[in-house]
Amino acid sequence: MIRKNCLIIASIASLLAYCKTPDNQLNDNRIFNIDVENCKTLIDLKLSDLIDSCWLIPLETTEESVLAEYIRYIHVANDYIVIDNNEGMFLFTKNGKFINKLIVGRAPDELSISHSIFYYDKEDLIFINNRYTNENKLLCYDVKSQTFRPPINKCLTNQWDDFIIYQDSLIMASPSLLNPDQDPNPYAFFVQNFEGNFLSGVNSTRMFRTNKQEELLQRMLFYCGDQNIHVKYVFDDTLFTLKGNQLSPYLILQFKEAQDFAPNMTPEIGDTRSFFEKNENYSFLIFRIATYEGLIPFKPGAMKAVYKNVYFLLDKSNGEYGIIKSYIDDFVGNSQSNENESMSFPTSLRNNRLYVAYRPNELMQKESSIRLNRNFPESLYSHYNRIKANLTDTDNPILLIGIPKSKFLIPR
Image (cartoon, rainbow, N blue to C red; front, side):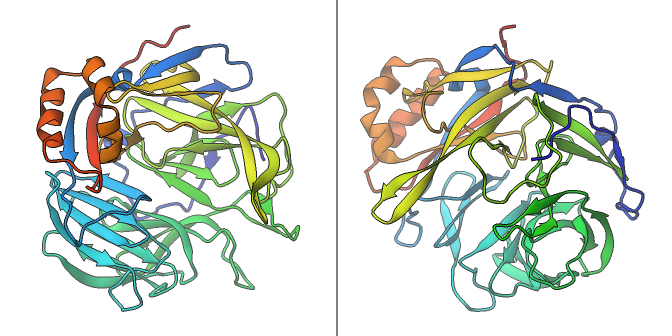
């Protein structure tokens, strides 16, 4: 893990020569410094502390739209909701009515079992990166017309680890962390246009070690939704803000000891790694510091990695932060503490919303708690009562959509 308490702004002369940075990205020069090892502030957090207003959306259940337990991606746009899992991509209206789905398969317009997507809100387009079929192209699905547009050629045809739509007409992508090419490209990330032409790239300055002790280049991941785009090396701790032709530190995690060697892909006992939400809201940021503690038996013939997780809440309005000691979803009454191996929180979206997904049996089992915990507007409970009148255990999830509060009271 490469850690430095003081980071020098990295100038990147060749980055995005064809791009124009929006004015609202130039006015925000905040740098958050988080002393993760000496933080004494403990926070007892509730869902109602995070949400200013909220509403429920039951997802329609039909023979075609039954959602499996595991869901890896949810995006709530202005007029549509997209749900992505191992079986395919499901489209619903903003009120939860089922529209159609794209299935996993081997046909040209079907999804690979391993795929990633990016929802482009401005035009209601879904860009799909199939890792095992059509891997040299991005599929482009028009949600309004429910048809595929012509695919977009990749300027670099090896696998991509991450990608976003940038400045409306550009694609920003990071190459695969494990690049099989004999002459791998040097980029932490690069930019191409919709015609498949390479525009610019940022050379990687970080290394990591594989399980075979080979040193390879780290790549960068993208974090979207705030007024800026943020990027981070896969095994590093610092979030950078992308501004025009340079990267500047945005969030720096401070540790007592700096480690200047290439991190290992497989952690060693005592190694720590940081994890951030893929999407940000304007108000707060929840992130996790995980310390690897080793392997324990999980089931016959299998081992499970164990991490000690510490969760932090950052108030972006004033830079105050603290360790989340406990979290209560005070709509249904679920409680978690930092003694648990892991904790779950509302998921932020790029459009300054967040969501919580409830399975019907969870709401039905928590009926008494919902009646007692009245920390939300009465209209929310009235809507819930109308939903539960026709609710069954096998129905699709119910989404709670919220607008984040602009400020929090984090004790000093």
